[in-house]
Image (cartoon, rainbow, N blue to C red; front, side, top):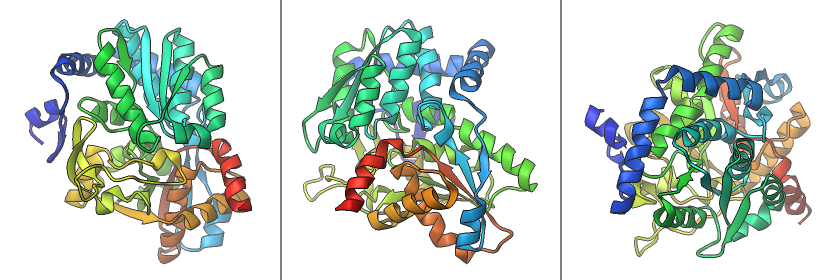
Length: 387
């Protein structure tokens, strides 16, 4: 990748910045500030402080003894992002961006959310730093994740249901971008996934890379070697790119992203522009983003991060899809076997690990990035299993 491509946020042919002229200056300034502060010792000291004292990092890399025995084959380790404050990996990126927003003098923060975890994390950070918080959420997702809506409101955020389109994550992103266009002089858009125009994918990856930074160190301490595979769910791609980041140059480590089979962007998408960047997109016959569905609201997106698109194209990472039935089975099995209730998003990664673990030897190692806990999904799963 040439310096110019890096500057413009390209990963091979994917990425870039396809935005209205009025936003070019805003995102250019954001990029400048990000690249300045990411190397600033004082900024990084404060970031590490909040990750340690507020988020609760380092979180454990847990050896799943019962699951390993039940599946046979490879040893299973769980990277416990579910133990973070607010219940998922989303808070890692939010803390980084809110500290950046503070230095840029922002008072109003907007965000999009699907499953609600990014919205909760953003509302949490805005409460802590006394900033106005607006969360856009698809109307359909507000029904599926009513508990998270209440949590956001309890934290002082204003949640705006989006009724356009399918009323899901794509539509929430649309509205958040519209807000930014109209209010860019006073507003900081705290984007939650590794998507969007430059510098968002690079920025989110940077703040989420703490996941693989820790897991790499932890697995070397526990096993004396690197894992054979790292598995993470993929919607927009923030937890997966964080889980992969420090293994990208380790060719012996398989990187496996798992999608819903009803939103298989990386296995069936084609190059196109969505939400101001180029990536693999599921398109209909008219060339518009195709309606998608996943029982996990956080994976319900017709595009995907540009770096994942690039990793798919060059073959560095593998991307696979699992069914709703496999996900529900994995959700229940991890709960009963290890006493850990995973988010439905994370259960996608568990479901695929169950498929490949028995094909591997007992001295091989799989790390599953457990991106979030399942409190938010328990009521939804209750009704799905009941029906």
